[in-house]
Image 1 (spheres, rainbow, N blue to C red):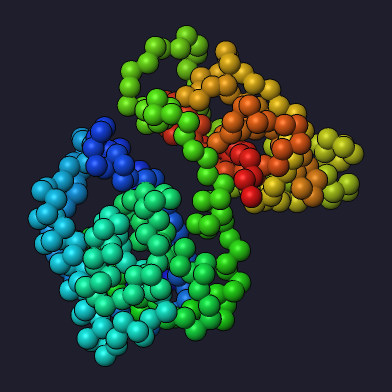
Image 2: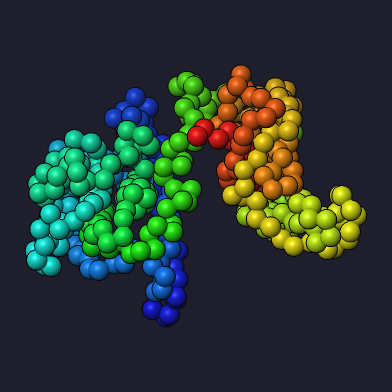
Length: 356
């Protein structure tokens, strides 16, 4: 029933393949964001909102399309993005008798850098001091996730009492007046936008980009296809999805994957569950496999990680430069797609170098 939930998780994600050598290829990026809504212990309060609805189409992709489509640029921008966002922003200010100076931060969905600046100017905001960075130069346009990612980046810098205007675009436009509370200080040290930007690695070549996007035909590698089983994925879902290990109640040894007998003291079925996804660690040893494993970015690097606080984990490494690997490299974990098999997407936790 409407209003019956105490908490709601809202997730936005997008991964669009742009036409090669197009404006979108330089603009698009992949991203995801999540916000938890509740009715108590709030870091940010929603004070008011204003919305308009519209059937306007700007970018679309049919079910069987690989690449997105769009209409003439001037029409899409003038009648769509600028028109709808300006109407919504001005409508909110008028409805609640506010001025642009009443806001400490302004998060405006950005079509591109030039139009983002134009929209802020039309609404009367100071682009240099009030408007949140669009992330276009560091991440790209992440589609559905774009505005939420900008909002999260703004909240990472927000102070208690800050008033934030958040406006998003799509099938019309929505604008919200947000207020940061004292609890905003407790949610800043998360794996948010800043931490992901610091840890990103650049793709070394355009050829690698085409490979990762699966946009070219390559020679078939001669080896058995990857295996997947729904029964196994369900049985081990806690380990696969949340990277849950176990800690022995007798000797405090942390183990992954889970098993019935402690590898150290041989105690049986005496464990407590522990989450390992947010832990960091140090590479104990690793191997480089150029031959036996299919990977779009050879070599496949298999590493044994000593976890901070105890325990050891065996996994593959991603976002790495094979020439810079060392046995004492510091790493963190990231949830990544491994392969497709039997019509299923298979995911698991990999490690990547910490670049801080």
